[in-house]
Structure formats: structure tokens, C-alpha cells
Length: 111
Image 1 (cartoon, helix red, strand yellow):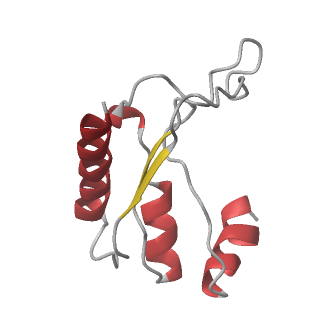
Image 2: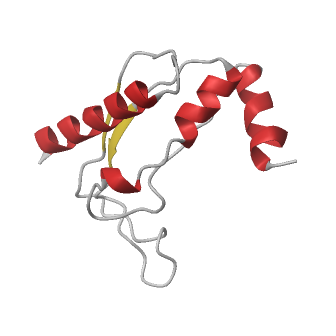
């Protein structure tokens, strides 16, 4: 059994939230081409809505040896924006695109 089948789907089906970051690693730039559709697929399979979230985490630097673990700079703001829950229809492509658009719009406004 995969992690998906063992942990994530049963959690979602029990109304336990699962946070998925669809970009493969933390980076300094937003790259929509690196976004996977795991969150959309999970929601569709579990028959639960997705809550799109835009996060700007410049305060958490990129680490030197371990790429995802860097120093925290408390002088920088962390910004978070949520969208209303979205139910997945069809293959979820429209919902995936809408999530990417939300993130792009928010990040542009936060610059």
C-alpha cells in the first residue's frame, strides 16, 4: 500500500485536514510548472473539497545543506491567504489552474 492509501485518504475521509505543498521544494521563486496535482487528486479520490492557500514565506530562508531548512528572519512578514473550499469536478484541471492563479495573484500583490 502507498502512503496515499495508508494515511492520507483515510485521514481525509475522517475529516482530518491534510496540508499538501505541490511545489517539489521550497524555492525563492514561484514556478507553476513545478506544481503537481497531488492535492487535487487526493481531494477528488476522497470526495472532499480543496481549500486553496497562497503562502509567502520569505522569512524562512533556504538552507545551505538541507534545502528546505533555513534560518528564520523575524523581520520579514509571512503572508497567508485562503480561498473558499472548492469541490473537484471532472479531472480537477480547472480547480488546479484556479489554485495556481490564486497563488500568482496573491504573490504579485504582496511584492
